[in-house]
Amino acid sequence: MKLLFKASFRSFLQTSSFLLVLMQCTFALAQNNLNSIFSVPTEPKKDAIDTAYIKDISDKMIIKFNRDSKIDFYTIKTPSIPTVSISPNNLQNYSFGLDYKFIGLTIALPKSWHESSYQNYLKGKTTGVNINLSLFFNKWMQTINYNVIKGYYIPQSAFLVPNWQDGVTPYYQLPNFKTQKIGGSTSYIFNASRFSYRSFSQQTQIQKKSAGSFIPTLAYEYSQLSDKVEGFDELNYKKNLSFTAYVGYQYNWVIGKKLLFSGGIFPGIGRGFVKSSDPNNPPQINYLENKLALNFNANLNYQWKKFFFGIQFSSLNSYITEDESKINNTINYENIYIGYQFDAPKAIQKSVNWLEKKLF
Image (cartoon, rainbow, N blue to C red):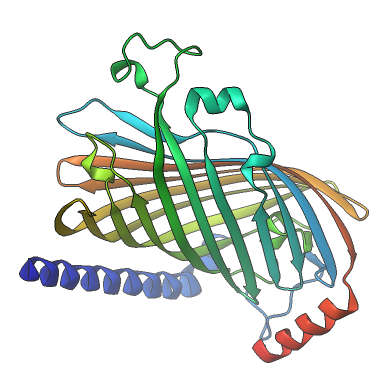
């Protein structure tokens, strides 16, 4: 077991080194060549924005109310069982967001505030926590997120539940199955002087003219799957530390003076270091998994005086290979939001300005 662990860990370090080298090469190539390919203008000596393209309103505090749907489900395919999915109860979520200066924070409200008793009867009760933090440092963007979901069900319950009828018989439920994820991403926005990521994500800037940017990203995540799912060893008591390098491009189309459409696509490749064990049935197993990922998004935002509203959609698809098993982890996110700009309280202004001076 020790030899297996050492070999796996050595391979994991080699993979991590490869991803870091890949990111460095990507940065170098982008700096030397991609400006001409994507017609990205040369950056000024300072990290100042081009006011002909971007209007900065980060001195205003943004409050945003979101009605979103985030579905984090797994699809498993093995030689011995048919393809099945494990999904949480798909309920609409509500969350509040606050953005000021270079900081953005979103916290989801408890699901118990808006749950459906009939959906809980059919699919089981799902509870969870979702917190997202975004930080912007000139051309750099940093995200940190924490997500917990407990309570899943299997949509393909016909072969698991005798005489199962859609809409009548409860699905095969996994009330104690829980996923915990903590992770983040580090991105470099090459054309930050003319392309505003915050114009559609945080609404603390306004894109005045259409522009795009190449945005290489390194994502990292620690996830833990708890509880035993009978017949699905691929998901039982797993701890996973993964790294994924993305090479993507995002473009903002300005339609008139108030409407913005933004779209982007980010293919990626990565590796994961996995520990899998059943506390009731040792020993522990260590192994590596290969990962291919594709992330794409579309956003529409309308600005009217101090108000704004819009819709967002994103899909993150991870294709994971473990020996003869294949696991797809798909996270679909849909959001309808409305927000308002106002002057930040003086106490917040003072605190954030102090932090901004220390950091910059």
